[in-house]
Each structure stands twice: as structure tokens, then as C-alpha cells.
Image (cartoon, rainbow, N blue to C red; front, side, top):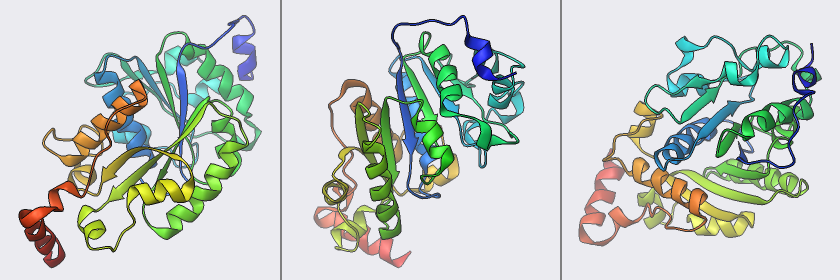
Amino acid sequence: MRVFLLFTMYKKEYSVARKIVITSGKGGVGKTTVTANLGIFLSTLGARVAMVDVDFGLNNLDVVMGVENRIVYDLSDVLSGRCRAKQALVQDNERKNLFILPSGGLNGTSQVSGQELKLITESLSQIFDYILIDCPAGIGVGFHRAVACAEEAIVVATPALTSLRDADKTVTVLKSYRLNSVGLVVNRVRGDLIMSDKMLLPRDIEELLKTDLLGVVPEEDAVFLSGAYLPKTSDAFKAYKMLALKVHKGAGKIFDPTKKYSGFFGSIRRSIKRSV
């Protein structure tokens, strides 16, 4: 049974939740980690958040969030009519207002339409403030399905030239969808390399991609070790908190990765970083 049969009685004049697709031009830039942490920090602001994994091929949002052993139903079950979208939601281990809709394996994903996925997100829209859609990397069929569900987009890129080139292509395609907004998160930024003129400034990347900068996340061991649920003393924790405030309120500060490397003590930190 196709998913539209599940929602033939569902009628709604407008959406309540902000539906944001998190995408990237290439894989390996930390898109899923950004999705997870943005969801966590939005929920700490009191928002009701659902994170939907529509990456059928490389789905791992449930693993990042640590709920992989608690899954009963997933998105493939919703699409095939075995359950409703609400039944497939997995509540976060620590936050009552944060939920994950895992992707799961699905045969014949090329036959799944963006409209079917959109009906699922619309059915959840009435009970959440945010729906974050974890999109497959690239600009293939999976990308277009995910973007069709959203009203806003966040592009995740790193300062690497290959990432920026692919991000530029992604931004160009996103603009053809006439979304309410397209924002940029620059991930894995190293302040010591910026201070040494070996890495582009996030503001330069913003200008290069002609996309509003929403947040900057530093390259840090805590992200690699923790993924989600970062230690409060880490720079990444501060960066994601700022990002969530920026998304939630539309204004606010952006994390400065160069601050700790400025001045006399900053020069010492740069020297230590180079020697490691």
C-alpha cells in the first residue's frame, strides 16, 4: 500500500512546523552530525523537534543519536503502510521533546516520490515546531525527494575546495526550488590554520557561495568522540548552541574559531597545534 493511502483523510490548510532540509554537496562533511546536534540544541530551547532520516542508502542518524537498538518501525514501514508516521518515531534517550524517524533499508527507493515523503512530514507538522530532514549527499534523486519536503534548507560544507565546489552546485539547485531560505554551516573549521592564512575564513566562504552564514563549527576531537551530546566545555558545544539560537531566533552570534588563537597565548596554541 502506498503512503498516500495512509493520509487520504488528512487535511490541513497550512503547516505549523518549520521543515528544514540539511544537505551537502558531497559526503563526509558532517551533515548528519550537524543535523543531530542542531536537533538537540533546538530541543534545549524548548522546541518540539523531529529529525527524519531520508538517506535510505547510508542511513545512520539513529546510530549518531544512540537509538538504533530501540527501533520498532522505520520510514520504510511508514511508506509501505505497515504503520503511521507517529508510530515510527523514536523518542530521544534524554529529551522528551526530541524524536527521530529512522530511515531503515528500503528496496526500490527510486520509486518513492518526494510527494510521498512530503505527506509524511506534513502529517508530523501539526505536532512539532521543527522537522529536520537529513538528506543524502549530492544532488541525485534522493536529494530532490528530500528537498521536496522542505521549506528551508541548510547546506553543510567544509573549507576544503572539493567541498566548496560541490556546495556551490547544491546551492544553485536549491535556489531553483524557491525555498523560504537557504543558509550555510561551515563545518570542521580550524582557527589556527585561518590565523596562518592556510584556510579560508567562513565569511569568505559565505561570500563565495553567496549564501547567508548561519553557523561555524570547529574541528575538534570532542565531535569525533561524542558525535551528539557534546561535553559542555567543548568549543563545538558553544558553536552548536549559537547555531541553534541563530536558526530559532533569526539573529545572534556566530562562533569565532580564531578567538582562542589570537594574542600572545593564542600564538602559543598555534605553535602547539602545528607540532602535534
